[in-house]
Image (cartoon, rainbow over all chains, first blue to last red; front, top):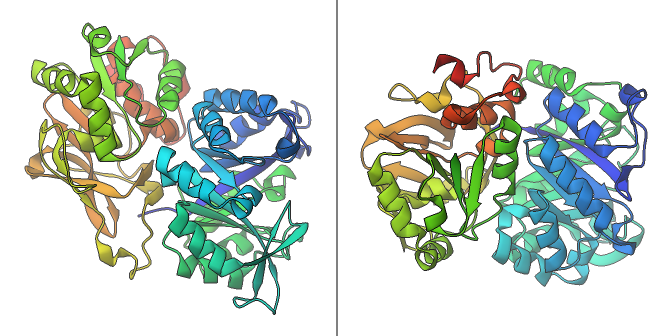
Length: 254
Length: 226
């Protein structure tokens, strides 16, 4: 049976993590490789590195980071942030990442999804999407870009369906309304997108408890749940999360 | 020494890094002649079958792989490599290497109506068939491996299936035909269980595999039995 994936997101800047991690306070909270290695040891299924400054800067530190992560862990990982050309995709994949997440550049240039999928395969091409409730949109959700700061004219559901047809092999769906609240994922949004595309959907934004995760993986029909502060804070380990999910009947890798 | 076939089909970096972490000596090459003297060969690959066959023909690896399989020396096909060794793939109706009799099929069209997404992407558990294979020595049945694929192999002879997984249907995720082994999952991306499979395949090369002593994979030290 296919398992529901638990994915940890690490925000990086110039090749360093931007937030401290409680359980690694006495190691090196700035080094994403140390964090990645610890989550790998704990049994995380996948990692996402989001480079929050990449679009405005040289990508060198990020590529060096990817190479170091690839040496340290033997599970899939995805890199997002500032990937806006086929060369960016190629460099990221060849440095050792399994997937690239493309957000704002895909809105500006949708053909990038197709070009990437044709060369590297759809399984490498992840659409990152930030959506926010908006009653004026057909599906009730609008797509935002530039880290959720800039509204677009795109309807979230229409964009998800179109991105699949363009070549995206997976969608990381972030709810702007839920992001950072730790009050739970946006279940309605996640279920709507997941039921209407044929590719996996990763739910993002709002995770605060294992119940939230179980709910989005069940009722929300997400294929994977992305978490960050739940584990970075030291409140949970991956193992504890998986044990709790399993006890609620969610199929997880252990 | 272990040879890795490089034919421009996907990223082989992760295979290389997994072997490095196991302390396996290896050689990657785009030229068949440079892999002639190897003890065993890994045939990886990600991508599309027709493009892959074209690359194999232009590099001469098509003949090399057929001859290698016939020589009796160990061969491990991974993901697309595990499919290309079969006779034919439904992916763009592509004639393949024909090392193992059988076909490569797409997951059924009714998957979408059944809310089963394609590609089959993520971690899935495996069940041993026909006694499994030595490449699974020390790997607990039911261990999860990382899969990403839209096509699966359908061997003409069911007795060559060494493991199956279930995604809507039971499908062969590992095949053993004499010296030829093939796995649909990515051992190089499957954590400690995957490293154990690579370690077992390369066991004669491995001096030290402390890296694979992962939780739940008790006794995943293939060479200790050798």
